[in-house]
Image (cartoon, rainbow, N blue to C red; front, side, top):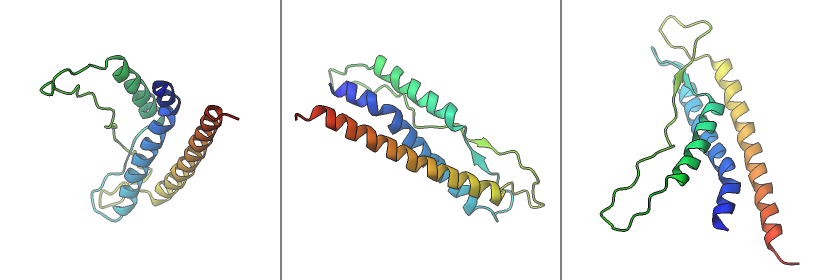
Length: 135
């Protein structure tokens, strides 16, 4: 039962975690807009989400049972994302590649999508909660 609940909410959990991480990357770009030689970074959200969901399913499928406290944990991690460098439209003379217009738009877009994901997961939880309650 718990596995089915976790499976029903796993996608939204992964999406929220990646949105949060992307928000930090975009905030870092904005914070370093005036830093010489700073290279703007970002990641492909859909690729990372697909990898995180697939990795989580694979992790569950390959789950190892530990019978001793001296057994080592599996080491499979879905926490890391591949950060990519943005290709600048017009790099500045000091080597900084942050375009504030692009960063602001991406930051606002990511914020809206984060809120949408929160609304969807809240709706999903309310639906599951309603299904489990007796009338």
